[in-house]
Length: 420
Ligand SMILES: Cc1ncc(COP(=O)(O)O)c(C=O)c1O
Ligand SMILES: Nc1c(O)cccc1C(=O)C[C@H](N)C(=O)O
Image 1 (cartoon, helix red, strand yellow):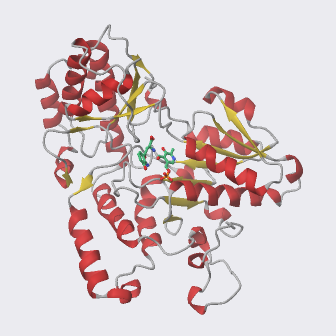
Image 2 (cartoon, rainbow, N blue to C red; image 1 turned 90 degrees about the vertical axis):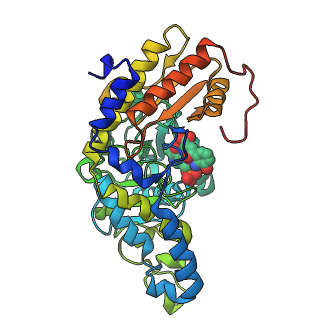
């Protein structure tokens, strides 16, 4: 049906019939902007401003240190983790919101390697498998940990999802994958990949940065071992908002991570000189949390509580289908190559097109108020956030893209900024 949409008026009708359309009013989006970068930094929930005011003025300003108890600051990582849990198929007391995704990757990987080190085959199980095309921080964190441990761990980088089945074997300690690829938008079959790796004795760590809040996830049904992800993308927690970490309950008792700060201690205010890990998911914590930033995450999560991930997925696929169809019909012959899988089962919530002058074209789009981003090599990335993206936004974005391409209205050798 989406394939036959070829007027802006038809997109207006899609918006008029969209059951999720009213949710957009809960976001503060600047006028005249088509925002297609919620996969990198989500838009601001209007409620975040009042929340920030309350945290800063009342909780910090007025109640001062009493707020650790009175405003529940100390429990915030776990309380918000419980709110996030249903979005990823996790249960109560299984998720904390804390630190950054990079740091949580380090903690989960370190704990997984330690669990594997206690197995009888530990001498030969020394490989961390991931994708060469994974988001670089994931690979860098694994490299840093392996180097620092200096116990013979190696990183094996696979070049395609198809290669995974031959790359994972009895030497694999951990398979660490990003569920939806940051560049291509390719979506892994979490359940099948997890089962195949576990059949070889590997533990499986999922980075949900580009899928949490974008599509339904069921960590329990997939029998995953560990998961991490960002809250500042589809969850709209704000720039640099703390990330989340999930540990399968069956691993809680064995879980040990090396950043053994006092927030992970059994009784931090007894001030004992020896570290004794607390029970459960709070073991993933390290030290004092950035409370103002952490508190912002709740405003984003509260919007998800008004809908469900299946409804969001249905709209997300309609938006990405429409974008692909319109770009291919209206920008035909303009040397654009679709990088994202067409198959719904393999597609997240962003769409990427490659063009030799991708960076210059993206700059021109941003100058016209259509905000996406650019990833090397040559990839223009457009994120579709079903909570606030409209079908007319898709139309308007493609129309701007078409005009820029037809008029060659972009700088061929645009100077790259620090953040692309
Ligand atoms: C897959 C993936 N993991 C991790 C990150 C970021 O990690 P951090 O928040 O630690 O910078 C990103 C994006 O920045 C990402 O796309
Ligand atoms: N975390 C980011 C940042 O600190 C600056 C600019 C962009 C980001 C992003 O989140 C990028 C994103 N993970 C990506 O997929 O490229």
